[in-house]
Length: 443
Ligand SMILES: O=c1[nH]c(=O)c2nc[nH]c2[nH]1
Image 1 (cartoon, protein in one colour):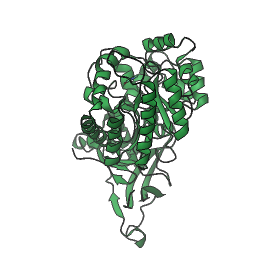
Image 2: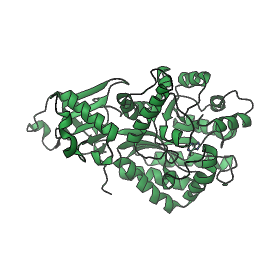
Image 3: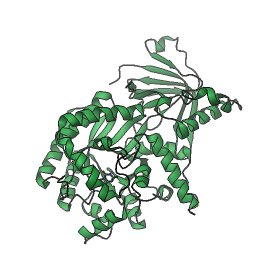
Image 4: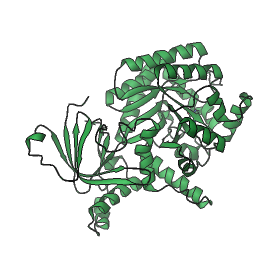
């Protein structure tokens, strides 16, 4: 895709593992969108080797970091950001969410909203997003088209629902399965290597066995990912067990329909039993931790540390509009807050550090979406999805002297990264790159 070859000179930081950062001062060479060389010295950009390359020199206060991965968000719900968050999940869905999502039968409306959503996320540093669209085939294709147009890496899902609700927002089963297949084929026909389809049974409250197992067949046929929600709220869990009396747990409902496998990512997973947790780990299911909506809809406190210790793969999701913020920076902060609250309530070791939150937002998210062979950290051979951050771009004059005491270069980079993660916003993201292409929008 990218014809532009680039040389970055300056400081870089990326997650090596949950607990370890890699910090470099030197050069990153990007050729045709891929990282081809990382050095601990500044390469000689005057040499013939780099003639024609675009040279990007970072200032002392700038750092390159991998782009953020949002593992779970609902693109059609953006117009509802901040509305109705005083209601519990099932009420909120019926009153606010389904009526809004119904409007995406209007393709023009869909195109208008999705254009803004994709640009907004890119500007906030989300280089990869895993999207729920709406029930509509044409409307959700507009989301895929927006991601392609603006150069965002994306998994795009047409939502599937076949059980009745008060809003009349569901589909006939056969029609739904046929439309999903057409959706998958249409996205594959775009032949865009950044954007792929993901099957999207909304959750077991709105999908029956016939629909879920039909979607599992389509997922097998096209080898595509599958996403849904699990165990977000106690009333939801109770209802799912009531309509599936043959199942002993929420996870069992999905498992019986062949949804749980290593192509699957489940949002929330707050109230998993130990058996469900073991099933998810054993089947290779990843989860999208969505701390903002878990708190806003009073769904619960997700024990992320317990899950990580059990080797469950975890990424972060903003989950708009149950979540009240579209930026992964907030998801990192909420992850730290919720986990600190769990620790303060007596769960020793449950707090998630800022380094761990950074891992979850980048490499962890890439692993959850099975994209870590391509993105998530800076390694030779990976594609170059990155943010050029400038943590002092806004309030530099106030506190710039605060970090310059030690004179240690690595500590300086760590201070910059920490400042960005705790207090930064989109104004501190000077540039966004997806596969080596600039993707920051001037709105
Ligand atoms: O936070 C959520 N947002 C949704 O749109 C949704 N649908 C099912 N379950 C859900 N949870």
